[in-house]
Length: 144
Image 1 (spheres, rainbow, N blue to C red):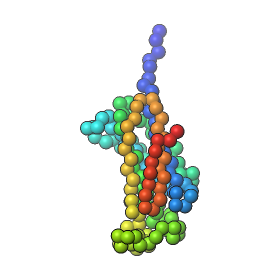
Image 2 (spheres, rainbow, N blue to C red):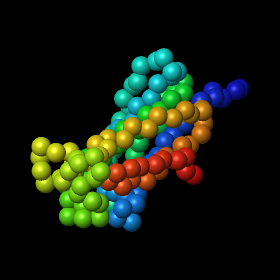
Image 3 (cartoon, rainbow, N blue to C red):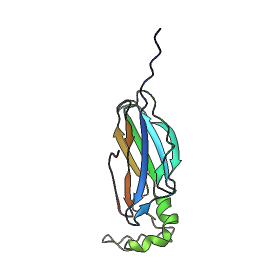
Image 4 (cartoon, helix red, strand yellow):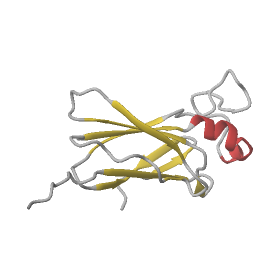
């Protein structure tokens, strides 16, 4: 008697490090979406929020057939509310003349209000995608 085989689980995890403060970014909303092919529609799978260690540990597994994944990080609230007291690390005036002060509602609180990362996946693998964040830039990579 043969046992039914199940497709290998493909999973995603992430964490955010605020490189300007030298610590994890807590309380950042993260949304996970997936699609089965470049021309397919995105399907929202779930959302989470980074914990005190800057990690999202509860993102759902990806559906069978997923070939591309998108992580959307809502970073503006982090910089405007949670880090308002630490913004002295970044200059208020940039060469463009744009003033970035979170206490002024008419002006942006973050240069990048959101970060969207899209990447390809293969069945059965785990993908850890860390976000290194600062008020005026970010980088990502495939972690382990």
